[in-house]
Structure formats: C-alpha cells, structure tokens
Image (cartoon, rainbow, N blue to C red):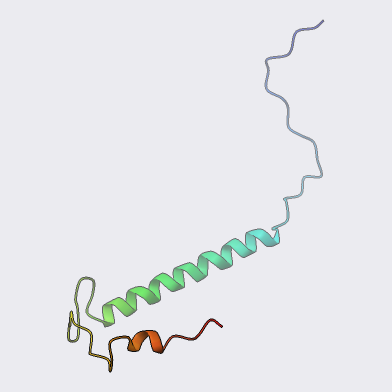
Length: 80
C-alpha cells in the first residue's frame, strides 16, 4: 500500500469560466436593498416624530368609559 501524498492538490482543471450568478444571489441582493430602504424610511419617520425616546400627544393611563360594563364583549364577533 502506498502512502498518501502530503502535498496540496493541484488546481482543478475545468472550463475556466466564472460561475453564473444564480437567481438566489439576485434575490439576496433584492432583499438587502429592501431592508436598507426600510431602515432608512424608519429612521426618517422617527426623526419626523421627534427622535428616539420622545412622546408626543396626550398621555392617558385611563381608557374612556364605555356604555355598560361589558360593552367591549358585545362588540366582538360571535363564534357560532
């Protein structure tokens, strides 16, 4: 039995062409661009509303009173 060679293998002989860009690479690029546009639009929206940590408008801890105790249950759609 012969001993395995410890030298690195030579280059693989092929056609020499670069691999074509697949549809999956293009979809990754489209998704990256969409995420970047979404992040930029979100930052612009936050800046328009006063920046991070600011609260605009009236803050109320109490909800407005409904007519009747279980008015929120009556407005739900029925299951049957």
